Length: 313
Image (tube, rainbow, N blue to C red; front, side, top):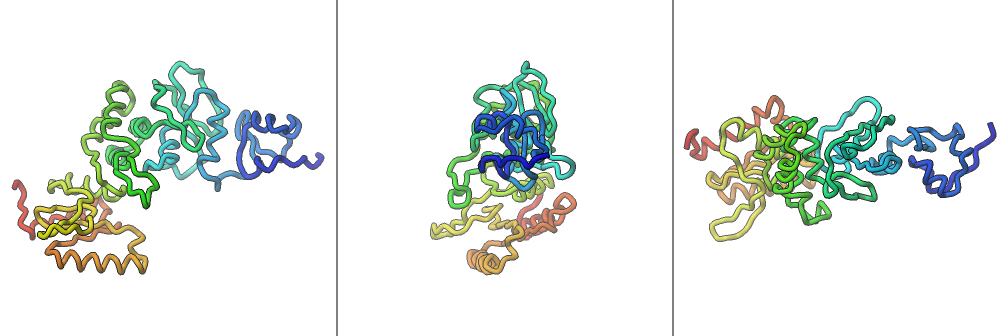
């Protein structure tokens, strides 16, 4: 077979639709050449795609199908909503179509046909995608209650502009409740109703959410989230991840980055501030979270008892 003619630069290193290639002047003969991988009807790629950003990989699968949007786990990953992702087997993209739309059977695509309102789809980086609140509700079909709380906490948290690049939450608790009220008979709705009672504004990470859930499930008082310590003189100090102001206890979850040299210095300074303010610091790491976070709960319970808390008070 003759050497294939070169493709326009824009089609190198990414999957593309046959329609967009034809519009750019690529011939039908070139599109049939064996140098191009067929990723499904109407989708081609020159080379492999696993290392590309998800938005680049999924875009042609949305464009080639009318009335589709990225949804479920795919929408969660695109929209930075934490959710457990499948790690094995061929990559599959979740897309949603309104109920009544024609059946769609394509490789690499899991199609969900269900009730879908116009205001439940937005556009992110040029790709139609379900809104954060609709994505959260769809995740109730496949996540545990705790995982759904983690996702919900992330949706409603007030972002830190210097880290997140935005200053508004992905959605509000009222938005999540609106989805539940709108889709009463939807699969996973009972799980969503249970999870929304446990979602709180203020959690900055999935680990903080899971730690809070473990603490409350163990019968301990529910801690506050990222509330600043204010001393007797009215001076505002740092914000513990979780805290009990009544008992002057701050709980800090230390992720992997806390092993970095600069962070170690900051953590030591933070511990010194706790002591100076007359507060107790409880430090939790990944190892304390194994086995339903029993070790983490034990550390928090000990600090509470030492500070005067008793069950039933």
